[in-house]
Image 1 (cartoon, rainbow, N blue to C red):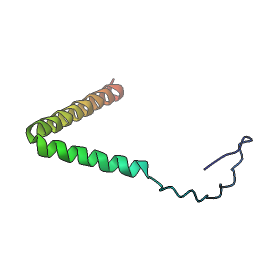
Image 2 (spheres, rainbow, N blue to C red):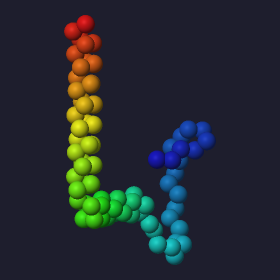
Image 3 (cartoon, helix red, strand yellow):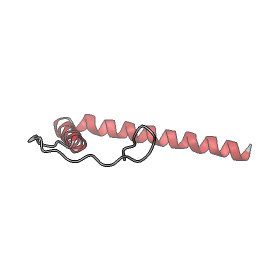
Image 4 (spheres, rainbow, N blue to C red):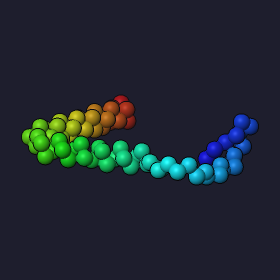
Length: 76
């Protein structure tokens, strides 16, 4: 949504023919990210597994810390 200077909803701008190819940056970044992950898993599976293990351990310890915090808040 676009707003004008007064804060009101602005009229949509008419599309213009430029002859350029429209690039969806989000889609390209997603595909590049997936390709990078696949390359990493194929090229170095041991390190990729270790990285995933580290991420899971980090998430587990973070969740335990949040649970401990909430328990201490409500139990005094």
